[in-house]
Length: 282
Image (tube, rainbow, N blue to C red; front, side):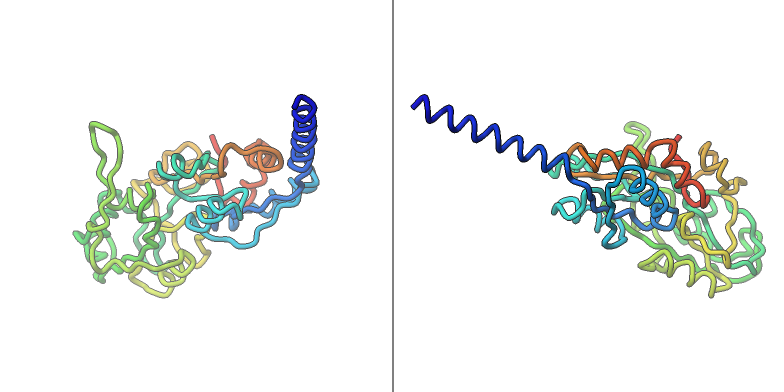
């Protein structure tokens, strides 16, 4: 019996050793960088990271929060990037670990032919809740307002919907979102790229979109008198700044941890910031 236990112990020792060597020798990770980081310059970060470490980073498909959650949950992704924080169920039942990776801004765009230069938060909320319906009510021409949006992540603390319909609970400090407050004529467009194209083609259009997706043929307006610039987003004086999130299944280790640490490092953040679409962490 004693000999048998010794043999079993030796086998277990070698199995653990083999597993540890296999884990430590993993030289490839699979990620979904999300649309914002993808447009913001994540490929340059990946290239620099691979050159520095020899670890290959594969991006099979770029998608939103749903793709990241599904991939991380099923083990198809080592890293998923989300524009919203993980839910309590995801960090609880599913064991997700969530941390901020960069900052983005929600910018309001209109066609360049529209003379309006600024809207207040109250005016924007009233437009999307149906209380303001004509551009002349906000200093523009006498034409109907056509509000568009990519209304996404219905069960999450999503910044755009919080801004447009949210109400802060003074006791808890939380912001509740009520999608029923959206006016019935707000057009919900599936993809933010299509939102931009739709607004550009509609003289009366307006929409909130990620800074990373704003196209040159659109006019970005100031909100509450503040234009979204690198500085106003960095110091968060611009009113609609959001954090982009990295999620993993459990605490990251090995190559996954190396990648996350690199993206968050001063070097990685500087590479992300080059295009001006993504703002580094504070």
